[in-house]
Length: 261
Length: 224
Image 1 (tube, rainbow over the protein chains, first blue to last red):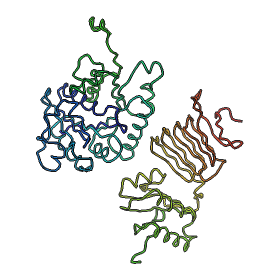
Image 2 (tube, each protein chain N blue to C red):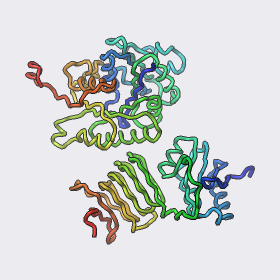
Image 3 (tube, chains in turn red, orange):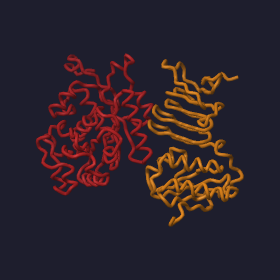
């Protein structure tokens, strides 16, 4: 049976699409699934860096589409999980190098070999977005609790509905409970109420994400990171497991020591 | 001209209009001429426009609708093979598929376009718009960044947080009703108001209308 194709999209840039793709890919692999992450951001590739696989790239997505290599050659094996692969984007080309049909073919063929195929969509609602969501069985909308990000997410969901693309689910990233408490940030209920789609994860803001991305070691690998835990929980929800959504706060030294809280 | 720019013929569902050229000016001229020739025959009817593979623009759609409306004819449905065009048609409140098993169209009962109404059950998301020359009833929300524009009145069974414009052809008597009225902007006829930057106190059904040259909104349960 072919695997599930999940496209990670947002409309707005900088909300954490690539971070989410890398972490959910790793989290699904940690659960024992065979996972391929496809970087669809042709010309602005980042996913390889975040996953720490940049120096292993030989062939990329465009090479495969143009018939210069076989599918498996374009899939870079992860250094930590043998069943996790990355299909990198070409850095030296642009998004017009591939068509909606090309991307759909690559994703469908890849899905034959894996349980999950995650596609990291480019920002925006133009051609790059269109080819990224076309093959999807599910579109994960990543947003931040900010008015601008939510408005763009709403636009994307509207496009998905109008064109009968795949159903959408929501991930709220960079959530800061303290700011919500002080009424300085939209709370999760307000965001979900407006967007009216299922929420599958709330990822708290976590300083470790930045250093983790720079080191190519996504936070999902970090047992102690609240964001890492939230990504792992989100991945479990994507597999159909019923995991209650809660915002994980940073554990204090004593809580960690005594295993409470 | 090698071929006629349009085909116009009566069907069980209504009048079928088929543009035969990409040149929209020719289509409009031919349409106008055909309607003038048989004004009484078409008056009060409705049109199904089959554009096949032509990529219809908002301007083209608007121009056809305007021409038809002048002859008291409704642009009822647009059939297209293109997704963009289907979307465009839907956002203009036009059918994109002929309903199955409909009664043959009876013209005598039809009201003129500005007195007609559509019922839409959908939430309008950012970037989406709903235009209709008559009244609009929408069951759903109008999210920030979305707009509803009606020639007549607007009733929203939901929240308005985007833009609503009633009486878009200049009718200051039009009203806008909503269960929750928090628009970024309201327009009635030629009047414009934006919501006060201060957040509204309680949420309740309200009706907005023009009073003394200003748009006012009052709670539904406190009327008269």
